[in-house]
Length: 254
Ligand SMILES: NC(=O)c1ccc[n+]([C@@H]2O[C@H](COP(=O)([O-])OP(=O)(O)OC[C@H]3O[C@@H](n4cnc5c(N)ncnc54)[C@H](OP(=O)(O)O)[C@@H]3O)[C@@H](O)[C@H]2O)c1
Image 1 (cartoon, rainbow, N blue to C red):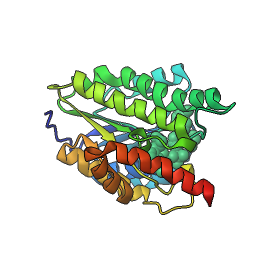
Image 2 (cartoon, rainbow, N blue to C red; image 1 turned 30 degrees about the vertical axis):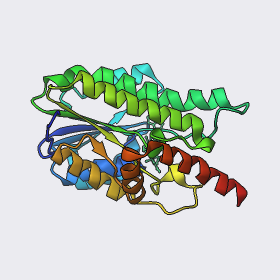
Image 3 (cartoon, helix red, strand yellow; image 1 turned 45 degrees about the vertical axis):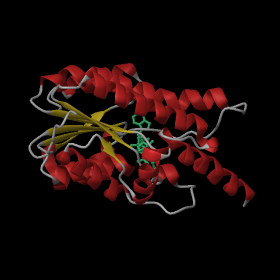
Image 4 (tube, rainbow, N blue to C red; image 1 turned 180 degrees about the horizontal axis):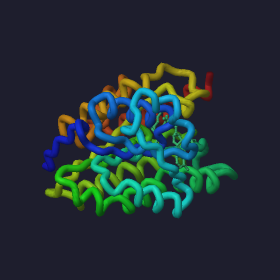
């Protein structure tokens, strides 16, 4: 097993989707834990202005649109000293596999969550390999481990992120790079605005991720629900699959 512990102290990180939700919380947590610099990948540079007084030049907003190849290449060129890459940016487009919207929903979810993540990682991988120690953190989802029918296309994109994480870990085995997969349950962000259920906070997720880096964890279940489901998934993945499918039918019945 690749046991690489990556304390953020005095290290340089890159967080995609750093302006809000989980990405913002991770950015702040890395800075609070002593990161030398955090590149904040955002689509609007001004969206980090409120944090500048607190963190000064340690916070470096960088334009990043994961649907735009040139933007990804430009961002990567500005972040050659990166040591911790956090692939956080993502979209949620609802829809399963049996509707008129299936292909559109697949395209939207995959363009950002999968292709965007892969393109950014590929653009930064050579820089990461040059560092003494480095980390790639991929934010998947519990839905990447078991699909929810109403979110079939999103779940498939997050399952792809899970598989990409495993693939990277295999390829980078015995290198300097820790590859971490993160599998959150429902977290209170804009993404889950319309979801009425108990949600954990982005701050807790960020803390668990940074603690995971420090401990060298390859799997992080960062919230109350994911800790429970994650444990069950490790022994009974089919039970989790059935529970997720049933969860939706209960919602529909209500
Ligand atoms: N919230 C949850 O319950 C939950 C659960 C499991 C996994 N996740 C995953 O956690 C990650 C963060 O989610 P969140 O809840 O924090 O969502 P969020 O509040 O909706 O934030 C999404 C972030 O991704 C950025 N983004 C979206 N499209 C982008 C693009 N084309 N290029 C660059 N950045 C883009 C957004 O930037 P803009 O502000 O410019 O749109 C924003 O910063 C996602 O990968 C999500 O799938 C979330």
